[in-house]
Length: 294
Image (cartoon, rainbow, N blue to C red):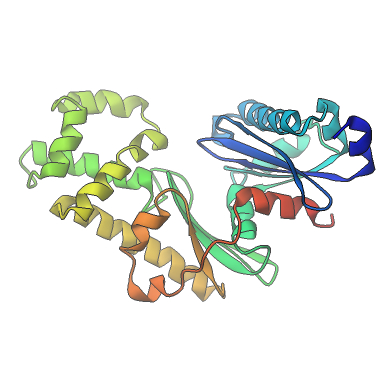
């Protein structure tokens, strides 16, 4: 599509900016995908300048794939979901920051995930990834449960699994708890030296803790008692998030995130019956947001 042709059609771009990466997709008014782009982490906890840089990089990549010039963004309506928008003062900072779009709407990344998961209809989501959060849109109202950040919140998340695995491995190392194949593998990461774990902890992020989550799930599925204890506790936390969203009136709940599929098998039967299939992703939600009247 040439620059002249782009002016004849309205353009929309959706951006999903999270803690591990940023995705953008540009569509025309008929919903045809023109281009996609990716970039690094865009969560606001890394700073507003880094967040905007990631958004800009992903958008430029989408434009390049669509064979559109960079200045096409000036005629593009954007919906942008960013992790951390709910932090105090974050939205005000975003609105004050220059942007390249014709117009833009900023929301939390959970908002676009919920919109996309239910194709714009009422519903709720529970994200189980590096962090965790429950979020719902019911009758035009938004409801949020948890998701206040690791380590004070984000129960049942990958980071939470990692934290508990390391904690119990250190206890087993001290012979305060039973040692298992999981605790041995965790300690092997630190060369069986608890002070290596302390040095690692001083610089570790939620993402670093979450790297232990697949290990925990694998051992739990194999019957490791410590792994099963950790995962059962995590599943109970996710159960609570789902039930709370149901209390708010969410007619359907979708599980999202890298741990959604493995943790679902551990959820209570009544919670599993509430889980609905996902109809779209967060970028779909961002595009639906961009297309909404101001």
